Amino acid sequence: MGARVRATVGATVAVALGVASCLGACGSAAPAKPSVVPMADAIPAPVSAHPDPGADFSLTGATVLVSPGGAATTPTDWLAGLLRRGTGFSLPVVAPGGHASSRIVLEVDGSDPTIGDQGYILEISHSQVLIRANAGEGLFDGAETLRQLLPATIETAHSPGPWAVEGGQITDYPLYPWRGASLDVARHFFPVSDVERYIDEVALYKIDVLHLHLSDDQGWRIAISAYPTLTSVGGSTAVGGGTGGYYTQAEYQQIVAYAAGRYITVVPEIDMPGHSNAALASLPQLDCGGKVPPVYTGIDSGISTLCVGTAATDQYVSTVLGELAAITPGPYIDIGGDEDTLISGSEYDAFVSQAAQTVVADGKIPVGWADIATTDDAQGTTATLPTGTITEYWNYQSAPPDTGQNSSEKLKVIFAPADHAYLDQKYDPGTTLGLDWAGPVSVEQAYDWEPTDYGVPSGEIEGVEAALWSETLTSMADIEYMALPRLPGIAEIAWSPPSTHSWSAYRERLAAQAPRWQAMGINYYRAPDVPWPS
Ligand code: TNX
Image 1 (cartoon, rainbow, N blue to C red):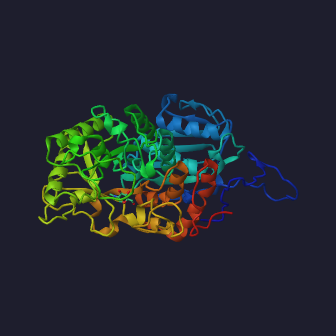
Image 2: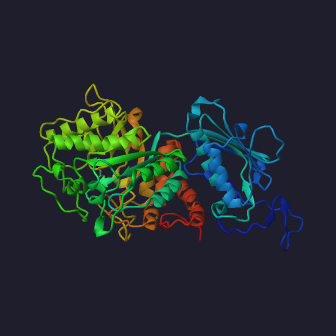
Image 3: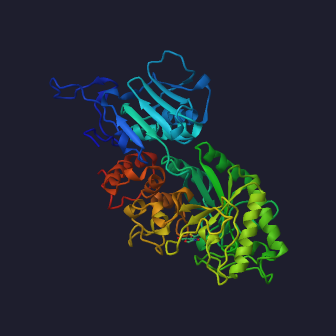
């Protein structure tokens, strides 16, 4: 990591921009330089980083942002907003070709195919920061790296600076395309502002998928115009009996747009045929006996199933998925499919096969828990899934799905093994929040694993997801406490080359993130396995 000093919040840097100011005995020593964040400290670890200590950049009141034609683009706007708030500088966005002495240039130049659409090249020199990429999302990822290389005080409005960035070059691109974070808004409901805040937090670590768990036994959280009782009844409560809540379609679209502004794709999940009590309590036609169960506020699983194979259920599935697809610009719709033991294997397979086809008919790619591709019934059959269906591995006690199990199917797998990637599990037995059926999951445990360890061919691994269930979580502070510091490790498993993975080095880099979280007002857990700055 070299001899350079880590930037810390509140570090007293007795240096005016570029001018040494000696408080006391400086003698004839060379002027002190502002401390900088070492490039290699970025999380996720970059593919390659070559610091050039003679070429540090300083962000000043004279810095301009340069974008093609001086036009506002998503990454330029985002970066300008962050830097203006932190520094109080005006940081105008200008067209290339001016004479500014200090510039941050964002450029889509298409010159390096190896970095793909999400990769970037970041070149930092004395007078210029240059971020090059093949697409806007690569520029955004590069901008998030630049953010991490600035002092943590950039996260606090109108901080005094100075704003030095280590010189050198980073070339960086992701290992897997799906770097997900899931959020369970069904067990407890979280308002739009909380979801947006979580989007900002996970974007810092280059997460690019937000998987929203919108329905479960305890709550239905998205307005469906054909079935208003889903929200008026199914959305009326939560685990423990709170008041619940739901998103209007406009609010959901607001979340989708906010995520898109950070190049994050929202994947909405309606869980079926199990985990459906909120729907059953709202719509009598979904129960085989026509019974209407009461709303459910406990935390048991396996308590409910849709009545499968009926016209009413078929209509419910196609209507709900159709309305959801119509307000979801992203390519995926998640049908859940976990833990239904109340119907037979063949009923389950037929239901899942049809639901997946409905998603395809709506122009989307089906996603579901690995249960949808698992042969666990007496007949030894599985659902017939469309090629390209994405299955999410979670139950670490069972084998991952066989991606090529019959010749017509080629499935992809995302890895969220509960004993590593479930952020709802306690950190240790003493953690007050969280469940423990797959845990505890320490910070090390969340980092120290590889999706390639499970026997799925690497070409069929779509990515990794950090899952956050909310049975025990009721506030944004709870969400943050469970996600941080574990989520960055899962993000690094998803982004960085396995050769960079090293717990002993990572824990030091992770510790250096704490000042940034403090500056952002994040409620994180000071886990004992990380050497936090005091
Ligand atoms: C299992 S993971 C579940 C969720 C729970 C979670 C709690 C999965 C597909 N099902 O319904 O919230 O465990 O850890």
